[in-house]
Length: 163
Length: 142
Image (cartoon, rainbow over all chains, first blue to last red; front, side, top):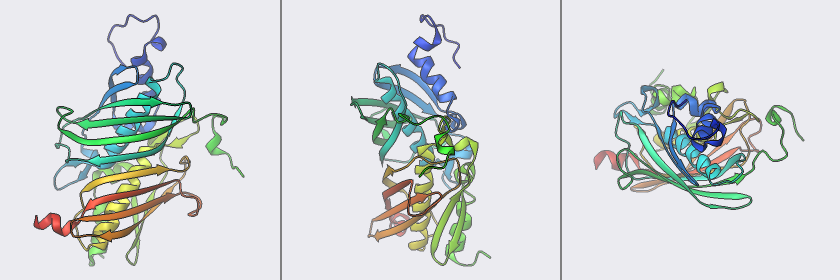
């Protein structure tokens, strides 16, 4: 994933390495080629490249809103996890995205996400997407996540019939 | 084949690179559109459950809303998104997902659209969306 040297004892102790591993473990995040570039407690920075297959409007070449939705959903979830002392799984409860302007064609979309409140059951996160600086945003997000979403459900739970 | 604007819009969505990336297929009955997103491994967000990525479900809902609005406003272009809100109700299972949208109001400048995604049973939606979009004609003449 990263060849940067680290002062941590093992990659598992390094939060950036850990979230990068999480991204690699998520097929859709991997398919988008999204990256987490920086991490601090409760804050993450990341980017998603603009690839030809992500274009939403062939006339203008602007990236599809869906790519930004998926990227920001993932980044916000990562910020929620980055706010935890003991990381667990999260699931999106709701996500609201306001679009200020279209993304610049053929440019990567950058974003920073901040988990401004981590509760026992719910984490609240906001994020801003931009292509140059955060003060000229493409989109703003407010999201809520369920904390410890896998609680009680075992691996493969969605493959079994229930009720 | 593609003689009505509706049919042209339906064909247009299948030409959108991102819709192809998701594998979205459009079915049009009268003026009601159903989008189908067949399950594919690259759509997974949680490989342990496994569950579809919420962003992908949101993307399907947004594309459905945009396309239904284009049909309702008899425009052949996709409207611009102003804002969307997505509520996640159930985790998306690793099976095919369907979505339909309802145009609530087309105003002079802004249109209000709701959309719903489901899998096995339509009465058990996995996610809903409400969004505001620029009304297509206004945008074109602006």
